[in-house]
Length: 192
Image (cartoon, rainbow, N blue to C red; front, side, top):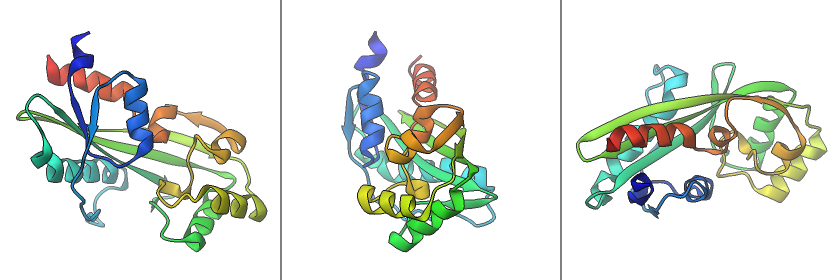
């Protein structure tokens, strides 16, 4: 199909996002411009991921080559109207996992896609139900998996995802960092 020949500039250093796009058969190039992930505290929490994805896309547009589609993304974990991003250190990672333990939370991934003068911004939301985590389990996970580059201090494709998530509502790919089915749907729209 012609759509899979369209070159994609992925403005993300996330190995999980590039893995998902490669597994879906897309031709991707990875490059991005660093941006400070700052947003207005009055912004609706569910809109933060899409806002940050658009911020990243706008900064990285200068890297686009002719015919490329730019994809930028951001993922947040939201529980009781509090956003849990990437933990700064071990203590914050442990505290985040203690908070998420034995409860549900939302994983929201925002995406901004740019092609020529067209831009599409959207987000996807999944709910994750986490079993209780003991102090020992949390410390093991943080020390062994170093989840400092992961929103909510965990990755669904690692130990917590395999052993401690009882249920998800929504898509696995969204929780991993990119709602590929929505990316594909919007890519078709952009290119038609």
